[in-house]
Length: 436
Image 1 (cartoon, rainbow, N blue to C red):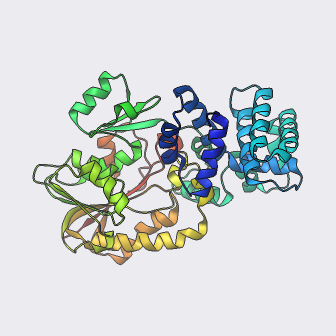
Image 2 (image 1 turned 30 degrees about the vertical axis):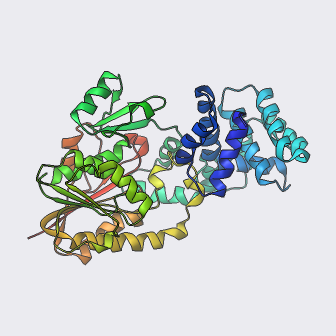
Image 3 (image 1 turned 120 degrees about the horizontal axis):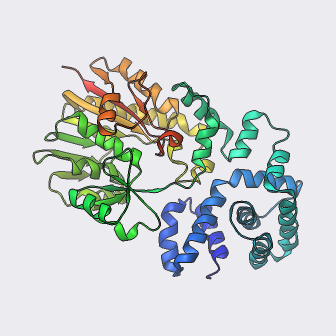
């Protein structure tokens, strides 16, 4: 099977069936299929686009179908057809023909239905279809269809933006729908030199960051990793808050990206314990940092950290991941507000363990790839009540020292990065210091 659209359809089916992530599945799948470089780009745009705009496309498809039930394989094909019609430079006749041919392979009886839906969609145009599909919706529901974000996520973003006195959620939603750049982290002076010589653009906000166009694989090595600039800043911030020759703990270290940045700045007398309870993720951490004898990768849960043992603790807590949905488009359809209470309880448990693990004068940096208030600001406020022995660090001066051009809300001591403002994942950071 070498037809790019058939491969894209198969990939989307696997993402749903296996609960996979397209960014992890795509590279190995395409290599196994021997797909050409030109077709790789087409398949990537088809799959990411169909996943990213799934809610909008489904709303329009259902409006045109007028209540008719649609098989899963046909719906997947229709999403691919819509993406070709409305967001790719593919002629309408080709987009419709290829989609109908794709449907014929699995559901030949649905070919006529598919043809009718796509032709009606082409005649109506996307703007008109979206307007019709959302005509009976309230403002949040209409914005949900327009931007292809679940309504509950939009409400969560609105609440989080309000903490920074922002009321422009549409800008954030639009940024989430843009194809993100591939960010690299240079973890040694030699890596910095190589990436500069290769002509890569340096990050405006991360001193170790670069942007690569196209396939990054030829550049990847032991000291060059794919890593969002926001994630780079998290580890760099902790390094700036403490001496480099101390004992570090990365409480939830898998897959190892932040541990690798910590190691790149570690002093010769420093150590890092990397806790990761799941074997497959612990292996990734070992691959990233296990070559250095200053690092110990331990298959432990973060809650098992010994008290009064570390000068610096990084807690990149398990979270909803709503700050990285531009990179993981299927996350929009897998997350639920019902998952938040369990996540919040785990975050609280880990934060307590991390703060107890600090030596007097030690620093813990708490981070999430989410701006949701119950995972960010609420965790900080509650932790300060539970732990009178710690104080909140104002991270603004530290971040400004690392990245002078970074625009931050000076009215808060914590830091919230925003995809639309900073072109990073929407990472949150809070620093705690144990007093005495």
